[in-house]
Amino acid sequence: MQVLVTRPRGQQQALMDALRQAGYQSLHSPALHIEPLPLSDATRRVLMDLDLFHAVFFASSNAARLALAAMADLWPQWPVGVHWLAVGKATAAEITRWHLQPTVPDGGFNSEAVLSLSCLQQLAEKKVLLCRGESGRELLAQTLSQRGAEVETLSFYRRLPSTEFHCPESCDWVMVTSVESWQAISGKIPPGAGVVAAGERVASHIRAQHTGPMRVAASAHDEDMLAALPGA
Image (cartoon, rainbow, N blue to C red; front, side):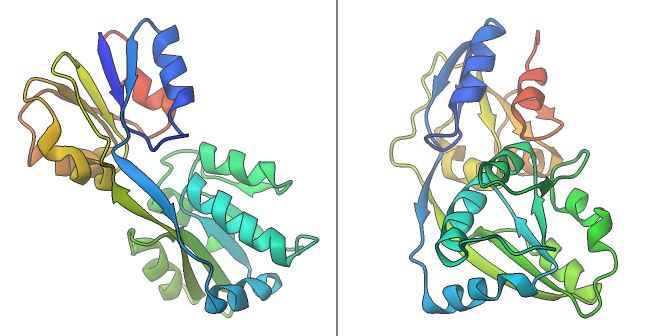
């Protein structure tokens, strides 16, 4: 059974290896290209005040990698007392690479799960920094503001549809891990191919445009995407 992984280049290997070990033929064609954004003077000024933030949230492993690299250039030693928040395990692993202790939800691995973290409940007169891509859901920022936080949002990259994407006619299943990924490839999937969607939010967008089989994974994590395949 052929399974196409659509993660950005450089982020596909662990899932492809897991697929092969489970007996599937794994292919890779990126749906999105990650383009880092230049670091503006305004962004540098915010990062210089990193020690004033109660919590710093990273919306993806890309956000963590790029934001922490920029922070490390300005902070020879990390500020103390900051909660470093990850949306999921891959993001947490990137934070750990920088010798920081991440906080990650026990399950869900989305904005709703992050909002349930104990450190984000009482936020009056506290500052929270959101590090993310150029576009994304506004739920987190809006809810944190409603809880009394002063929220600062910084963008460190943009997602662009990949010009390299190709789904062979022989492909049985396509793994889609974000709404943006689906929007980039929705007209390029063979009608008979199945789609594994990373969560119900992604699945709702796919249902509107794809008539082939679909399975909904519990999250975008590799083990959940793999578990959603038939026969897994």
